[in-house]
Image (cartoon, rainbow, N blue to C red; front, side, top):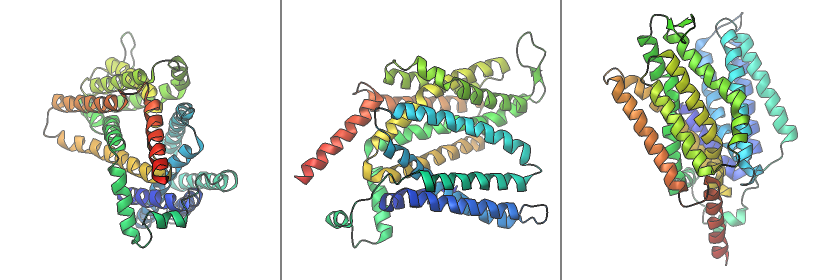
Length: 386
């Protein structure tokens, strides 16, 4: 995680200075070489866990460097009017890819490390070639003259990086939005952390899954089924939900989706009845499909043109922190009763929903909120130029 965070910080900053494509190509090349190396030291002829660990540090660093740049690239080539649909498709593709990758990994990871790493390396190489031949540079950095005008020339590079991210964190709208996103991720990640462990411990003997059916599951089976249910619903129902809510008020869709999501996970965090847990996961999945594209659109509309990668880097780090917070719940579950942890998750949901409500309450929609921010920044820039 530390390597990923460091990569995000460096990759986000450099991309805003030299453009997107070169950072992506370099990062993907290092990832490709890293997985080729990992395959060679996890082959039928030679195994070295220490070299594997070292290679994955470089892989994670490069992945962290590329992630905010990819996000910034999508913002570069999209417009506020079409971003909601773009992020709906991106959300669907990401989940479908995760489902396919998880299935392949489940079959190959235990006994076929070599073939798994070779496969990942080939996929990375294909992505690298597509980027090189078919994706044009989407961002031309500010000129040297503009840099001198802003008084940045002459400062040491580390100080420039620190100042850049200090300015990002000073953006109140973005900072508030990022805190809300961190809380959302923290609750979502509980399924494979605290919630998963609790279900395995509480349901250690097979119980009936559904009324009138003889199928029985234990806690481990149930965790897998909940995760699979979420993935299948997202893969097969995202476009249907998008079509249904297309004409709904976007603030209503965002807040309703968040409420459904947190209600579902709050039930899952406490209940041990398989049928109720499955229903709660369906509710949470529907909520996730409602809020996720709008949340991403708000993020895209919030960041300024010349610092998109830097903003996305901070957002990526917030997501990592959300994942880490989920691990903290697993630690404190040894000392606190389940009802307390459930209340904590519910409070996190209320805080997150409240923050996003305050960010959107003054505008007609979350997307209009982003547009108004962009227009305000544009007016300030024109005023300064005069």
